[in-house]
Image (cartoon, rainbow, N blue to C red; front, top):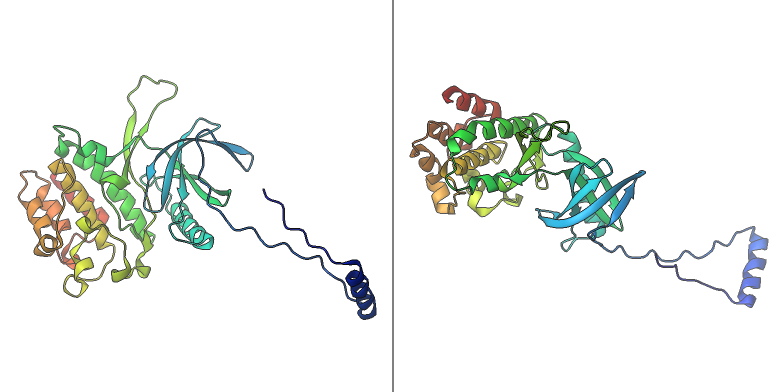
Length: 316
């Protein structure tokens, strides 16, 4: 930590100021050194951070999400966690802090078994941290498995992800970024019987670009080009961007599970309805339900996440 700059006043000037101060009954305040500029400082492997009397231990860098970098992390209870740090990308300290507080609020507002759980949030060395539960892998890793029996996986993935989305929507949020890389696989083990098979569940993560539904602006909405819904391309034709966007993305996610690969569609193909047509052409019993989630007009889609689940369960 650097020392502040020192300031001095000459003896004659000091006496003059003291005399004036006595006459006017004023007090001369000591000069305030300038505030040191904020400097982003990422953690290093092996670093320990003490927060409210509790240590967090930083491990290897795992990757990065929409707003930051992700590191292995463990607490003193041996909980396997990740530390997400917000990286300033041409942003001021105050702008990064605002993003950090925004994502923290979402994670605190949206505590649900099918949404990744936040354990702690703090600032260290002018860098903002979110400590979140660590999951075993992403759904992307499962989709890429050779000879994947996607139809067997689909009801289990759909039940968990649609539960998480329903909870977000009830609380007024739209995720806007549901895809296989943002769906996490949690494996809960029995510490007393470690030889038992872990219990699997699926969780929605990376809430960095989630927004309250009332705050969404269609032409200022961050979306990957390959997963654009038709309403993001032409809202006048296909309707406003709303929670129906998450229904569309969930449809794409389940379509990827059945295809065994994440599909990519051009803007022209999206507007022409190719995602829906692809689902309809599948031999799976789930194809027609997924197609209803991929309809071009937002108002014609399955209206809610729970209704989406009902229709999947009815053919399962």
